[in-house]
Image 1 (cartoon, rainbow, N blue to C red):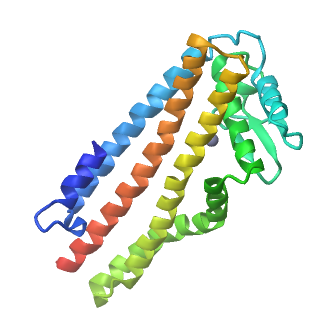
Image 2 (image 1 turned 135 degrees about the vertical axis):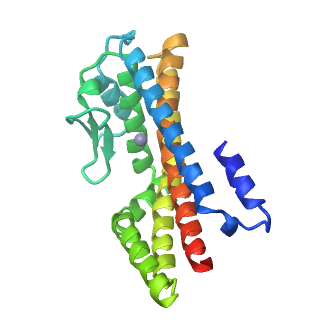
Length: 250
Ligand SMILES: [Zn+2]
């Protein structure tokens, strides 16, 4: 749907994306936000459903993670416990797979799916997976650009009104593009980690049939949250481009 909107925007009167109005771009942001809420709601309900389905082997998320790492020849990554909900992550600096309360000690297939997904990131790191390296390289730049972009655009819009110069605005948009690029590079990283997790869960024989498809469903909905983030970043850029162009036409 979002892509259709993009296409409509692109094929508008003069065929220029820059002709998109602020209200059209704002509508895109609303659509993406609603999609985001639906995805989050589905993710919560899917996770809640499969966190009640026990692992056939009775293993905890932490035990499954240990087994996946060791059976892939990774011995220098530790599996640790971290607080919070959906805070599971792999930390490449400390080489730790951090599993949250609902995953570490849980003996459910949702916990196994999440644990293996994080181990998928550890495997990517060990094998020097390209998109992960690119994503890690962008982290310091994104921390700066996400903070600075909004301020530059606000000050830039004031300057546009007074002096007509749009330079600062476009620098701000450029920084927003860095954040959007980060969200886009995150997609192959996340989908690949899930694919590694599911391939291992299947080949190890830990999950079969319905349990395996439950793990697939859980990870598929988790991945969609990253897709929404990327679309949201693109929609925000289109909105500010329309806003800056609109100001200059006034
Ligand atoms: Zn991930």
